[in-house]
Image 1: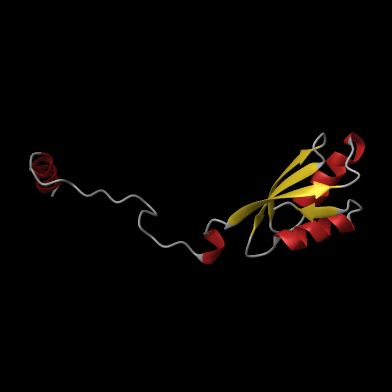
Image 2: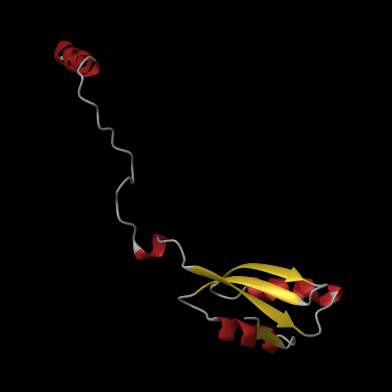
Amino acid sequence: MKKMFAAALVAGLFTSAPLALACPGEGEAKAPHEQQQALVSATFAVTGLKDANAAKLKAALLKTDGVAKVDVQISAKRVIVAFDKEKLSAEKVAKIISDLGFPAQAEV
């Protein structure tokens, strides 16, 4: 049995036909919960943004379901948010920021 396996292995090494090696997960469809989020990014003009409250705003936004990334630009009084467009919209994010005490408006 060992000789037959070894012979098949050696024969496979010296054939001109390419070998197809299967990689785990290669070509398989992913389950919905494993699919990458459909992220979009939006910029918001934020009133009242200061050093002292920037970290609070960022932390609160990152806890929001659907928010993937937050970039707070204090000097420009602007917040850039990357979010899952299946769960949120720019209008909803602006409302969330405003509800946190920072009047916000999406920039076009």
